[in-house]
Amino acid sequence: MKEKIVKVILILLGGAFLIIMLVLPLATVLVYALRQGFETFSKAITDEYAVKALHLTLLATGITVIVNTIFGVFAAWTIAKFRFRGKQALTTLIDIPFSISPIIAGLVFILVFGRIGWAYPLLEAWDIKIVFAVPGIVLATIFVTFPFVSRELIPLMQAQGSDEEEAAALMGAGGFRIFFKVTLPHIKWGLLYGVILCTARSLGEFGAVSVVSGHLRGKTNTLPLHVEILFNEFKLTAAFSVSSILVLIAVIILILRNIVEYRVKREER
Amino acid sequence: MFHLKKNSGMRKNNVIPGFGLSMGITITMLSLIVLLPLFSVLLTLSGTTFNDFWRVVTDEQTVATYKVSLSCAAIATTVNVVFGILLAWILTRYQFPFRRILDGLIELPFALPTAVAGISLTTLYSGKGWIGGWFDKIGIKISYTTVGIVIAMIFIGIPFVVRSIQPVLEKLDPQYEEAALALGASRSRIFFKVVFPEILPAALTGFGLAFARCIGEYGSVVFIAGNIPYKTQITPLIIMNKLEQFNYAAATSIALVMVIFAFILLFGINLLQARINKIARG
Image 1 (cartoon, rainbow over the protein chains, first blue to last red):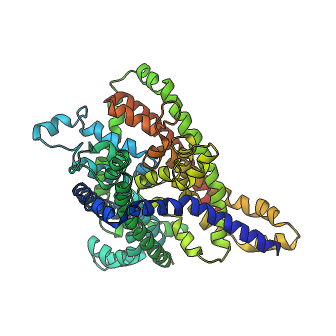
Image 2 (tube, helix red, strand yellow; image 1 turned 120 degrees about the vertical axis):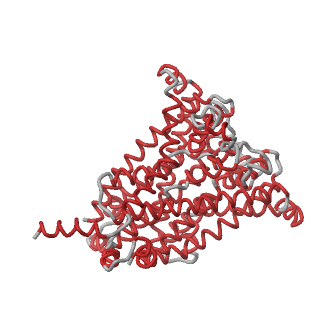
Image 3 (cartoon, helix red, strand yellow; image 1 turned 90 degrees about the horizontal axis):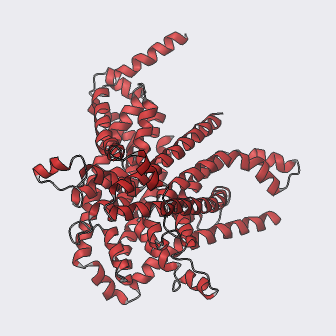
């Protein structure tokens, strides 16, 4: 009996904590977005600048996910399937972006490509703009999410060993053929899981992008930056309406993540 | 026998093709995207003397930001460890309605863009918000104070702690607890003597990860912080301010301090993780 009471109290405590810390902020977004009616809401999300910001966010996310997936697969293949000196060091170096503040991730690109950067004269000569332009936003997003895919794949590929790949190689298959025919079917859910995490973080990246963007409306504003501008202009309803698009994407990602995580656990067995 | 095994292991590794190509691509991309830009921090600071560097990073206002960042992160992460253990416990040990949904919800701070979390928490805890309104009546302000910073940091730290502890609790064999129970130990005694020592390393790892994230976090904290110098200014914010004033040397100097601190933290976490893996392997 006493045990049952303790159980109920603990569940209520944990539930209350999650409701206050997670559910209420989520509810706030939706309630504030719709508090002036659906018309104001739809006007805010079909606003010219909001749509342009959404396009830029999707573009940056798309490029980031492609680049980081290519890197993640090659890095995981190198680290999980071969033995070499300095493997631990390589793994640590790949994880660096995890431990660095997004502000610093943005700052380093200013230091390379900005007016005081060492690559600036070169860019000037070729008339290329990176910082305060779209390429800078993409680079900063790639930096922040760099280890996401490799981090999911490395433990998975290590756990599965390399016997099947060796057999395929001995029978004369090439590297790419081995990867697509032998390795990929075993890691596809883990790969998808990494891609989902990478997508989520890229869509929402704020600090790093904020440093390199330059905040030009309609040009270098991503959706999270657009939210910031609206909020700072005290346009609460518009800010929350635009946010609700991001919340919707976040919830979809969360659901996908849970489905895929279940599949990854089966893949590990 | 041992010799033979080792030999076959070496041979095996040479069979799979693609080492040169994949290693080349990995190193090239890593260098171009992460290492070279990061190296620019040192390159930029090579033009500054140590005295200038030291003056910037020990400036009164800058030191105040370290204090705010560190103390808020410490409080938030401690709260997260307590609730993280509680949540991991109820999610692994109990069956109750909505358990799956609560479990899935834990990751929300990962999936929700930080800026959205930031404006939402600010509004929720402001004088007019659902929660802030109640506190406002008894004269307590949350948004734009250090309490607000702590709340935002609790929000972003939740998944780190829960997800560190959960797998350990799942693997923990309940028969030890049952044995302790049969020997007449009380529930709380069992938790502190049997379960707690087992999850302690995982809890510390979670603490380290959440703490590192809190120190560096910008998006969800910047709105609720209010950015008042000496009071609610966090370190990433002062870097941003220096950048807006085009004071690149100062921004980079403070950034270097943060990077060094993050590396030390990361090193500590890795040591701890190695120890946990050792325990897990038995």
